[in-house]
Image 1 (cartoon, helix red, strand yellow):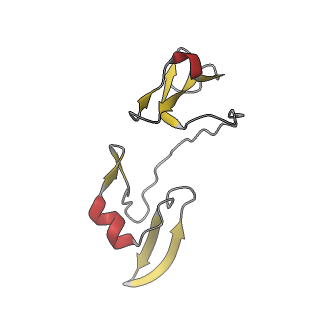
Image 2 (image 1 turned 90 degrees about the vertical axis):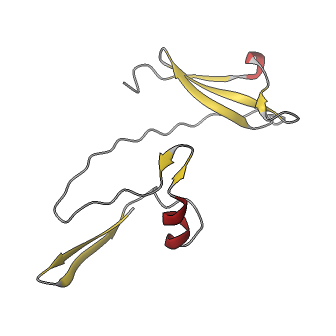
Length: 107
């Protein structure tokens, strides 16, 4: 996310927040797209406005022949990566799900 502060009609500060510019496209393309995976690509903050966010990251060893992730779910303290069925681009089945016990990581 990028932001700027204007005081007395002149730029006073400008910032770029981490982790929110992951798509390799110019701003105009991202703004016109608007959403990805049902989530807004941009959030506009007014000068002096404060917004708090929280993030989580995980590290997991992936089997060599894993076919990719079709979906990630969080159920009862478990983060589950559902393997993608290459032919049908859907979940391959619970026998290949990768599970991480994370506790009460998310509300």
